[in-house]
Image (cartoon, rainbow, N blue to C red):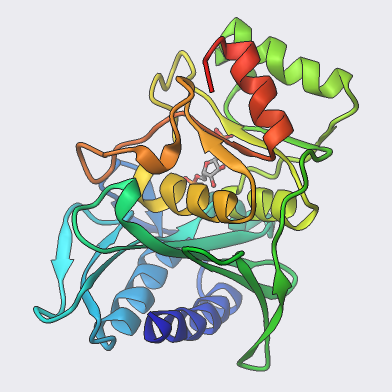
Length: 283
Ligand code: AHG
């Protein structure tokens, strides 16, 4: 597994360099979800594909930007599902973006995720890596080297509320739940990038990140394999919880298709208990 993490470190510096130097315009292509791709989406995808191709333990890879599975090494053990540049539509406004990785062994489903990682391209690079049984580890990168900065632990409750999706398309129960957190004193922190928004909550010790079912997206927006399951793992390993609108653990999801989405809620225990109450679902 270490060699995959080494490749992720190398990827971080290469994508950071691409963000700083490449054209920010659109390519002439769409990804598998029909969204227009930026040239940087395509470039980041290629950087990751190349880096993971040289890791012998990687059997195959699945990119959020592509339709199917790409087989790399027949003797490899792991399948890496990744979102090469999450939040890339924020880049022209110079906001933070990220890359997300889920490392699976066996069938692609939550319970087979054995490690996950993300990179934040902010004012500086940070990486978070989590394996089963240990707290997520935080690393900072500069001058092409990476240094461990500490581990991530969520408190029982936080102060941040990061509510995704267009409010006019929220269900009534969701609107009331989000409002109830604000009336308890939670502060709005939402950039529109899942990686920096969740990183903020993780580093500040708690809060809630939500992307619910909406009238225009009944299954939510965020992809199970590339975004939701890897972050659910990190959140749980940090001592928090991650569930869907029916109260099921996101780590128990079994996607029917590679690009399936799901409503999702990530937070510390207090906020997730409040969500269960508001949505009327049992623990
Ligand atoms: P994209 O990669 O297409 O820019 O989408 C970003 C994702 C995710 O990072 C973020 O949490 C969410 O979309 C934001 O969506 P809304 O603007 O609908 O809240």
